[in-house]
Length: 351
Image (tube, rainbow, N blue to C red; front, side, top):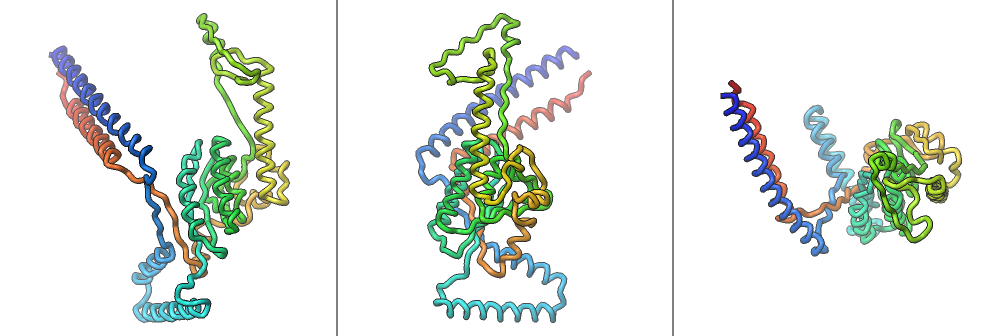
């Protein structure tokens, strides 16, 4: 009886595996088609604009409705109408009804190792530059522990486009802006940091595993052919030499010097040798060292500015084509089927 049950269970697992492989094959085909469609299409997303002043007002009114007595609510509504009339009058006096107050554009950058959000950032900045005026400002809410030098160098260059057009750039760090993240942050005219945000790490690090001795132990040879003395320095499979290590270290030092020069260019007065040790600091200490300008969260900054400017959050969102949506749906369906099979199998008693 036990042998029969084990045999039956084995057949059940084989069927599940076959079903999963077949569906994954279909999903892979759909995903490939979706990728090809994205490459062919130049317009693969859309820009979303959210008016944050209205969101703040909605939050305020929601709590007022719940906690204030009726008489006070009426007085507040009257005061608000009066303020709106005064603003309209001020706009008209400044140059007509079409004259709008200064605008604060809010961008978000959530950095990973490859700074993958740089493409989104590029599109958002391009959109802002189409409409920005001299008295407008950009707030970048930045979160990044750093990553590849060339990737974060490009991200920083995108931010320099804003400075190049004369726009004020404020960078707010609520949690972390380290290494490449700080490379981006230092572009700002002003850097804000939460008290315990991680700031700094102005350094360069690289590591590479080497399994040469393991391969040698098992009589495995690795042939590496290069043209150019330093086409390859350290390798994973071959035997590394002192000369290769020295060259690799030289390249790291050169990159570090470029990083230091970049920060020094944008943070005048900063004692770069004191802070470019690869260390990081919490926000309060970073302010003492001159790495940031003020201790403040992005929420605090926005609430303090909402009465002075119109605040717009700008977000570029990738479009999901039919193939992408089908791929997601099929993936969810596979998960449900697999869960159902496993539950059924786990509920079958052994005797």
